[in-house]
Image (cartoon, rainbow over all chains, first blue to last red; front, side, top):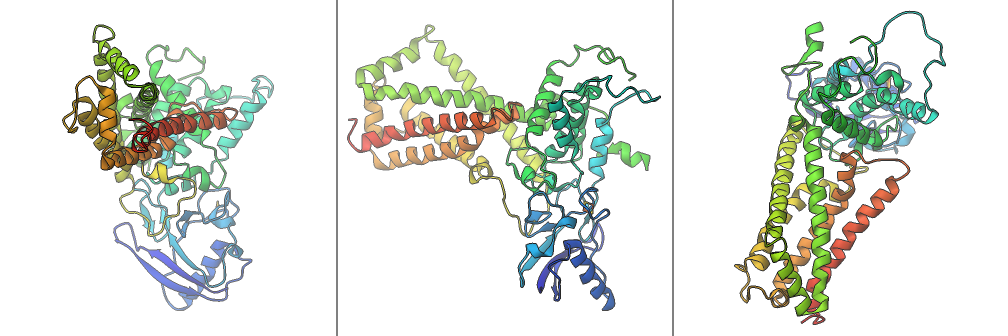
Length: 260
Length: 232
Ligand code: FES
């Protein structure tokens, strides 16, 4: 295949950046999208040019490091597919691909197509965990979990934190990410003691990072490589409302008996 | 870097914010006021159907609205509606500013995959509706924008008002705008209030969009009935 690439090149965080056009002949349709970029980069290096910087790690769709906006869609046109799992056979010979980094003020561009997602880490650090005493593992059956809840929690936990939801959202909102993280814990018994605190803290952090607000466009769900459903956002809204209404009525630490 | 992880833009992780300063809280304000206004447009349309029952019925209904609870009812309703509109606009403005800031540098190419024309134009349909509501009040409530206004004779005012073709066109356009606004807004507000359940989502959306369609069809029928001479 022969492709034309319009790639966002930006030297560092301060560089205003620009699009540069590259020709990419002799691309195998069996290559993954990232392998195609590897080939393009090898040729750039051979010519003494600066290779295109892009993020990746596992290349099997589980780490959430990769992520490029390809022709206006985060992770490209295929549903439930990360950039690394996308194959070049998805495209046609002679296609022009426009490659841009995920855009959000909370995700500053580090270089070319690489962005800094640490805003997500801080949302997690603000409350996306459970406080539990350490010690020997307890009996697996001591905490019954309804099958439906376990499934819903697993669906939410499938989030790999790639940030495509933010990238696709016209408001650059991180609601799907935050909602998935609130849900995966809120649906399980272990997550109950901190459930009401967690949602308020994580939303506060999400707002502080400068993400936008959800207007229910549904773009996030469409591009999510793990297909995290919008229902999680409603669950976050529900929990947030409950947490606000019950604020001050609960005795600190009385709900779960655990520490903190 | 523990400091970088613990702090961001002035707020330490683990702090909370007040309901009304949170984006999620403002969205709830948006949705709750939207729900009140949605309820109002349904009632408004149903009441106006009495246009088809003739002058006497419609005028008696108008008199009832002005006099129930010794004339206080209408002011209670007006206060609630005005407060809802003001809060709806406040929440919208505040969230829009947040959303604009959230992506200062946009994409060269962006392909919508799931959003609708209605969802992407909520702000514009809203602005147009606000302008229309002001005109509508001047037209049928105070009569300032109505050349042939007779206080108390609602039937006459409606019929003579809609007989002016450009006026009817404005009403029809505004109704189509309302259709666009409600197509997204009606189910979206329930989602924001947390009403989402896989078993009922389909039903939820069908009922919401159905109710919105009912309002739109009913409202469209009034100018059309006058223009075609069905009501005169
Ligand atoms: S590189 Fe790990 S998900 Fe793509």
